[in-house]
Image (cartoon, rainbow, N blue to C red; front, side):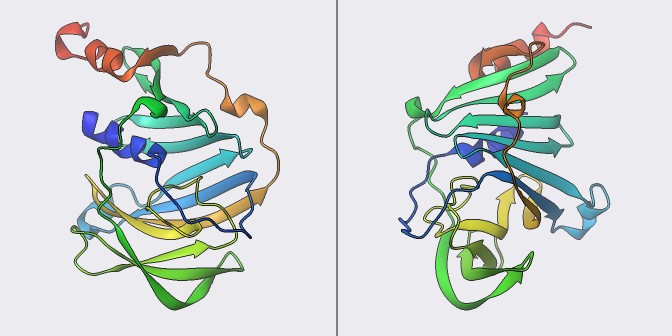
Length: 217
């Protein structure tokens, strides 16, 4: 289980990015379609959505995994603190993390290379880069919006803009993310709150709670 939590926490790792004078913040909702590239696993989960809501100060990412079920990640982008909301048979938990206290010991293995041309995603021009990783048999394509900040999807280091089509290496194999919906509006503030029926715990406290010896029969 720790491995799958690690995958979800990757979105919050602070990565350096290039300064873009013409970049603008995004306020609204982004929806990505997640596809498992391993054809033997695609029938198990043909469509996995990921939705991102933000008011440019707070971020909410809704995701789903076969192991943990629905997950919600809420982060304060300025304070650099977050909660991961998960549901378990032992109760609902909000796992808190202060990213200011985490040493950047996880070194991303993705390398990016600029490419010419690009494509349109949702009718908007996206620029193109090439991404390499030890788990990729060959370089994969990254499409991004140059005029929108990348802080809402911080998968790649030094990404010049918001990724709208990209690939990552995970414990399920190679995953492809494609932006399929983009709405500009101000999300309701309640989306970024912690429900009262969730117990706030640290990551270590959560791992101790779910130890086999602590589970009730």
